[in-house]
Amino acid sequence: KQEVTQIPAALSVPEGENLVLNCSFTDSAIYNLQWFRQDPGKGLTSLLLIQSSQREQTSGRLNASLDKSSGRSTLYIAASQPGDSATYLCAVRGSNYKLTFGKGTLLTVNP
Amino acid sequence: DVKVTQSSRYLVKRTGEKVFLECVQDMDHENMFWYRQDPGLGLRLIYFSYDVKMKEKGDIPEGYSVSREKKERFSLILESASTNQTSMYLCASSTPDRADTGELFFGEGSRLTVL
Image (cartoon, rainbow over all chains, first blue to last red; front, side, top):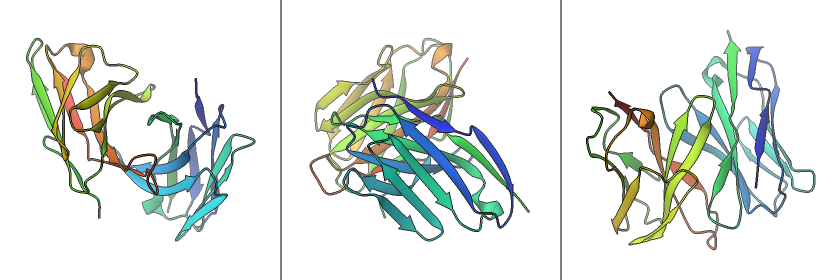
């Protein structure tokens, strides 16, 4: 059974800092990995999707990497802003339509 | 942009009531999903559907049923609501795994409270 772990569970940084969020998974037979952002009381917003054949994806200040063999992904946020404060979740998709989610990292960026 | 719309953002129901949560997507996606999200437990899959009238149980289907009569609409039904079904319910849709991305898009969520 796939298990997804996100460390740390919470992170607080000053504005302008570059930061890395981590996601690890136990079964490397994945179809893709997706990073989401969730604001309090809201749904999930897709940030980046990495297919199993890819190593990284970039969108603006965000860069996500994938190392299937080691079962790891990282989300790099450059020059963090208070508006980046949210919970960040990663999810891996296996071959049976299902996604397995991590429990998220709560990020607080302090002005 | 893909839009997944959940009809009710907040609902308050009484124990034993029948509850319908509606979800509509506008991108002609084949796959649709219902999750619930609880503090400390994360997101858990209740049911998913990969085509009209097709459904499969997720990890926690007990106490729930679903309906998919049209491609764009996926409904979650609580036949007899109980207090332990108080939760945030999230609907999502995606293209099939065989297609180009399989990216998952979520609605804004429905916060259900059962008294």
